[in-house]
Image 1 (cartoon, rainbow, N blue to C red):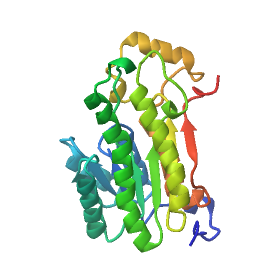
Image 2 (cartoon, helix red, strand yellow):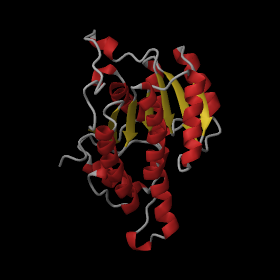
Image 3 (cartoon, rainbow, N blue to C red):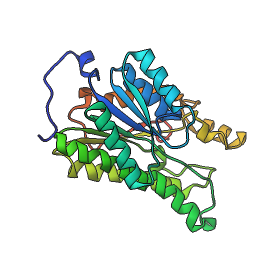
Image 4 (cartoon, rainbow, N blue to C red):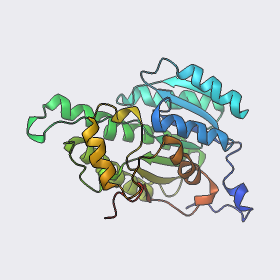
Length: 263
């Protein structure tokens, strides 16, 4: 059914994810970890998809214990289409279904555009764009069989503006592509799933630790909120997108940036 219509219910019940199964790529660190926790707090069973984390199994166990849900970790490299599809299929087998996928894996670099090698450019696109598509595609095959599902991409404000002083043409282009990909898929897959994006601004995660302090000071001066967000400040938006509270929303890009894109 096109944008399946849930019954009218108490608003807090609309946000309840009890009985849902959610997979999160990049779910063992940064934004992805807080999304894993947030969806579990809302009642969902969670499957953390990771590539390099040495603590993913422990984190899954902690999330399960804290929220009285089932949580498991699955290793997969999202740049490998067959590998990520196998992981998603394993999740469906282990949990009996899949309701939500949060496509969150991402990397960045800071390289002057004229100096990119083919390998450096390809690495960004492999993870941020190709890996995002492969992850969504793997879940969509399940959603089409079930007749329902929900895809949530993590994009970035970098999809709509050019960050300074860092030089990251590949990252910005990859995230702009993710936003457009989500729009395309939201129309193409409307009969069996919703597809939306969340575009964070500057979030205090280790992906920013490589940058010099003077860059951070520059960013603070450009953000009306005068601070970065903590990852946990995003989890409510992901619960909203994953839940019946957003039942008529598809193809949207929710910007959460402390006003950074406004001036």
